[in-house]
Amino acid sequence: VLADFNAWYGSAAVETIKFGPPQFTDAWGEKHPVSTTPGFTCCTPNYDTRIDYIFVRNAKLQDLLKLELSFSGEYGGIQISDHIGLSAEFAYP
Figure 1 (cartoon, helix red, strand yellow):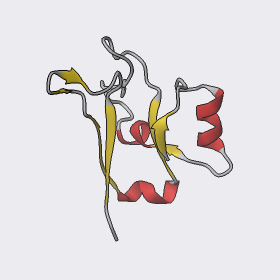
Figure 2 (figure 1 turned 180 degrees about the vertical axis):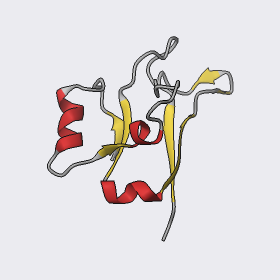
Figure 3 (figure 1 turned 90 degrees about the vertical axis):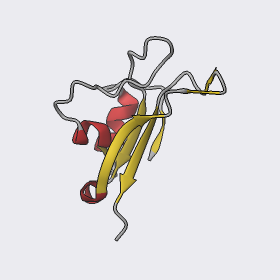
């Protein structure tokens, strides 16, 4: 499940997704637990908030190969969004 949830980490909406039922894991938090990059994705110009998430079922965490911030640049001199995107790469069995 991935989206702009418009909900800060620790909010009721995020906690409901994490603890379910069913339960989901915050992929960024799992892959970057002590990272100096907190995964801030919102909003221009400061990017000091995290409201965009990728949540996975625990069984799929082993298949999550890469998770990173992406799509932060301009296209044709225009900022694509006021958010930075998240991208994930999963192993395909």
